[in-house]
Image (cartoon, rainbow, N blue to C red; front, side, top):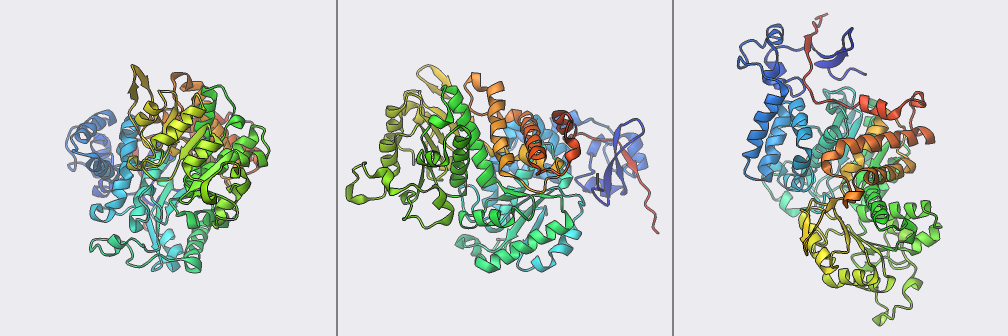
Length: 579
């Protein structure tokens, strides 16, 4: 492994036991989150490292520390207070933070990620306490190489970057987007085994068009309107160039870029550097995996489905692309798959000759598809029109519009199919197209339901219906980790598609018989191991991975052995010569 930092590095002794070699002593050790073990420093370490007298006399192990932390966590009055508590823990000790998160993964993922992360993003400036990651803007982008060179971690392998133009369901959030990157990377480590000292959250502050941010005296970002066009891409070009020069093995995950630039950004850079867009490809893979599981549950194939995707942003179009690829893999021609796939945007059905958005055109329906629907005044078909006449078996929501899946829409689905598949996937919870409770009541308990945000199980007519969460976290940690350890030069479409089928196979093997469409978030590490193993095999097969020496190895064992562990290691001091 390349040296992680000037301050510390992982080493292994003659007997194969790992330890942390540090070049700093005293109070500095306790102030650096990467090296702070707190009361877990042994008596010998305290003497050797200049910590004697700086800590309470009792030495405690990791479990005692976690018990103490969790007790304090439970005392927090609300979700945003819990979020701040966890972030403060992370800034004190990375090991303690990740060990706590891993131990209570299902409980804490909704705090460090969706839905609570949306509140943290909105309140970023007022909640700001500690620097983390990097922010590049028009004011410093020309010094990007120097900024990256000064970053304290030397071996960055995963970068999550946003321009904060389309955060979850809350839109343009300017500087606040950095919080979403921090949250994503927390899941990369807690759920995907990536060493936190090889990760980097980045916010590209290109301004904001949100008036309340520009008028807020406490707002910490640039008080300028968003860059557009050539100026915008010139800034992103400089960022990509600086990263490629400093960390050529780093994988870049684009996060929450608005639909008007998300597809162009991905197309512009995917052949220059290993990168993917989680909103397009991760959401697409996660939705496809859930749909495959739903098909298995009702004993049908993907090729038999007619699908409506409501929402034509980056996520919605990404889902539609993934489902189309899945239909082709299931035996349909590309033309037939397209005829069985209907995309709804703010105007209604996406139709050739009417939509002008280039990224939607490959999925647009021909006007001929609805000529026999007898619509008044040749109007554009609405969601209810499409559900009524196309008789879809699957309805997926990524619109961000609460209540879009109305009672007439859902009841029409149920009239046309015994087991309609209905996935309201919009985040946060307040933006969900319909609640699971309403969907099950309107379909007499027959719908197969999964959501984007976490929901409680539903009690209906004496039965209990588990509600699975279609979370991108089941995809991106495994996909990204495979790309990291395979040292991939690209993230191929085949790798992304493989992540979807791997998740569906994990679900079939472990939880489908229990009525679940997705696994529990508590199983995130197991899921990520499964997904990473399958994606790495695909990357080796299609040439995306440069680590061809891994061929023939037991990839599951190799991936598992390279998962970072949140545990305290013994410390040894390394004397640094002043020469």
